[in-house]
Length: 67
Image (cartoon, rainbow, N blue to C red; front, side, top):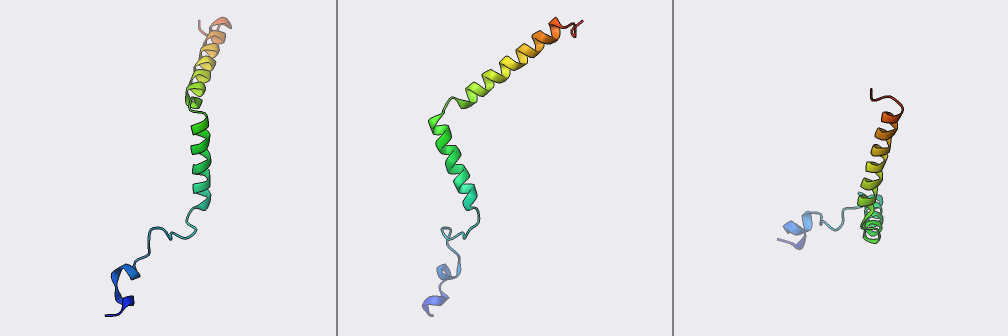
């Protein structure tokens, strides 16, 4: 039994993966770093969205759309 017959030599390693998704890892790294720098981003987005909905409801009520 030679060294080339061993099982671990036949299976591809997990590290080699080829060029399966180099851009995906770059995007993931970018967003990870961005969210690390701006941890309250989702809270701000939620507050802006809630304010926009509230303003739209008030405008609809004032303009007579809520009869």
